[in-house]
Image 1 (cartoon, rainbow, N blue to C red):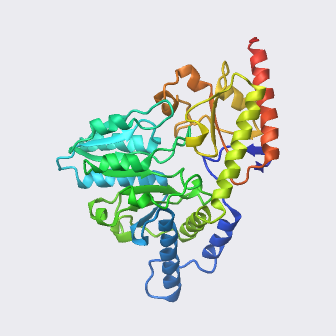
Image 2 (image 1 turned 180 degrees about the vertical axis):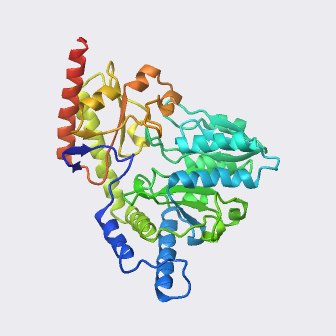
Image 3 (image 1 turned 30 degrees about the vertical axis):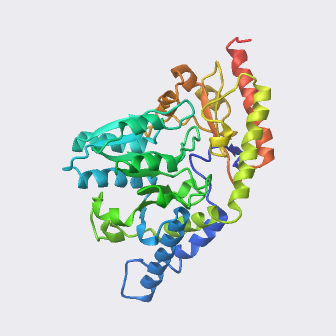
Length: 393
């Protein structure tokens, strides 16, 4: 995909909205703009019905029921609602430990930190292997009756690791702890129709699956909903779990995006993206033999992810040299925009120097072969120029 002269290889940061999604949303910004919570007239009824249908489509993505879906502003809010909501309601109980994997998204790590500081829970990081998979033996050994919640993401946003969620759930269920899964990155890469049977809460994001930014969802198992304290209060919409007017066009867009990633064409798209990613890495490594793939093998990795290490060169310098022709990411910038070491790469054993030399390239629905060829030429040329300027031979 090329946008205003820039090749886009940052699909895991945000996917472009699919034209079919945008088309589905447009009527709900114009003629069908009614408040879905207005119960006294036809426009409100129509909007409410559209939200109900959107709930069903999103629920179908993970094998849940419509009344178990709570729309949020995104996966960050969904993750906070899951961790803080459960912990606040259960803060006086005997289960005082929360376990999260060491490579979770920062919104999970920061929410867990807040739970620790505000509510006194003990928060522990689950170590991962060099491929990013949670150490299942460690999980089995550390789980006990005092663990309230375990949070493990379905698929990592930096190195693309796919976790064995069924096995993780099997281990967690022995202690009767709750299992939360951040699945924001997963819908474009995996069939998730089993996930509601495997996790008690699941977070999703619209803009990670070709839907709009600004909308996400939290699946909360029906019988667990009474155990969740809302993050804020108002009109009591969405069963009192998330007050506020549901953003009608956005939830319609997320629902259409969910429909597309569960369609018959989804598996073929994943194969095509994977082939594109594989070709990119193979050809780039021919140009730069010292190139290193960080994280898991392709067989257990997000089909559109390639986290690559460029020896002797700082990733920021290489990305700067590629501007404005190519968009990729170090995956290591915090919300202030100040670069900091990737906690994910450090957790799988990389040194600070190796972490600073790593770039995440991610591919998707609108990536084409011509974009791959042009990107390889740009990257290899820029890398060679940096190496030459540094006097390395």
